[in-house]
Length: 112
Length: 113
Image 1 (tube, each protein chain N blue to C red):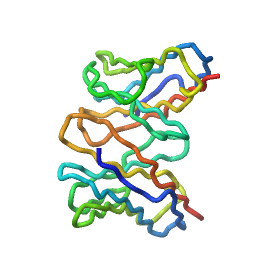
Image 2: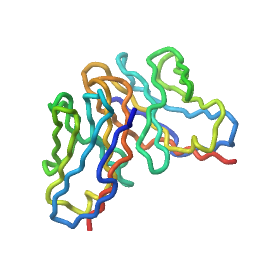
Image 3: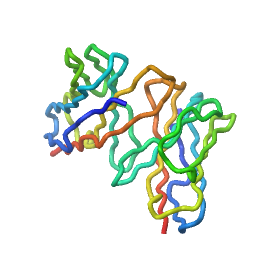
Image 4: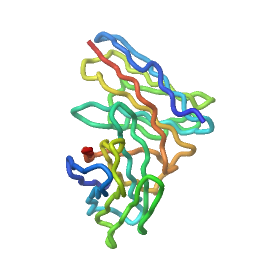
């Protein structure tokens, strides 16, 4: 399974944009890039996913590099509630499985 | 719509005992996956069920087992508990196998003494 690399931690100020990077240099053509986050004392929650084009939803935006070897999760205006561990995960659609391989993720701290 | 529920939320067991954890997926979801989360190993995939069949299994010893019922509810069992089994056990459900979005429950915190 292809691996992802993320910074261990990042800090942001409330109401400012946050850019969370993810490197996935061994990504294959059938790998989708998924992001989940885990708030304190909760299970992970889905944030966003994409294949090649940039994606937007109500929670965040996903910017994917042209060569697909890296991506950036963008929180447009961080709130205190966004403090969580963010996981970048590659999912292949070669097989019908829901298995997620979590790395260590990025711990995002949001300062008021 | 109710989310994924897991019972019990907290559990304390003694080494050598066995334990059964339960997961009720979101109504209409047929796929259930289980994960173990520890401070040292992070989130690790245990197994995945779809329509009562185990589709995938992680790298865990045979003491860890699971099953899924016809109503999609799932249970996981750990026999002969070890101290290292202390962890947060998370269940996730999705509509179909291979579906991109999974919904996680709050987890069961298991402590083995």
